Length: 359
Image (cartoon, rainbow, N blue to C red; front, side, top):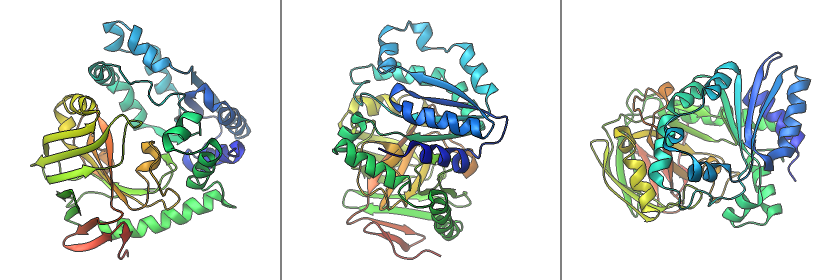
């Protein structure tokens, strides 16, 4: 079992940098109770207030099965009041059933996401972080035993290191060299056996994602110019808890003009049709976390995997200079090991999943 006290300390002191008097909203399911309890104690010791929002298992699919249209297309005002009133939000992934939304109308899900855009805006404008707590459902999705999955997550979080915060600080320094290498970049090209796509990143800001927002993290990312994507890319890592697999997208002048998924194509098409911005890219990310060496079905982990890149359909992160607006932000992951290449202004940066030179 992961040391919940060690995990909580990492979240408080590295991710959220908790200060006395702050109110921290913790949102998760009841399966994460060991971490929630440890986190509550850690917050109280730092003279902060834990505000808990624990959802029963299966709540989300039951909402979609029973909610009226007006409940799909709105949200209770108290949710906005809570988000505006707290100093930080911590979300903990701890699902009980990865297939819980299977069979739920993707159109309904898109409507609900659109209605809750104001809530998302408040979250993203403040201090937030997301992490993961091992559950049997996550272990099964990863194809691992419960104990092996716990060890995998522990390693990805650097909780198996003597000083996890120092390990994250070291990763941050390594990634900063990559950011410096990419800052003057103009064109990025991604290639493998089924992909060849170019993106313009001229003048865009590269972000060092070192665990302050996502825990675990291990990526650098930016937002390509919205009308610059041209070519085709195949994403071989499953997403949306395995409900969508084998996505191939073709872009012209930034927008998706052809799209197909080997599995879950109806979900893909619904996401693309959510709003006009859903067909354009909001993010280009490069994974660097060597502690994540296999796909698990959790995007939080998989997009950080060393040797991969990911593109996100939809919403841009304003701090990158991106301007795309959408209710969607969907990270799709392409494994570059082996046979993949990323080149920057004609110079190879990544070959077969490994960096050729940084700094």
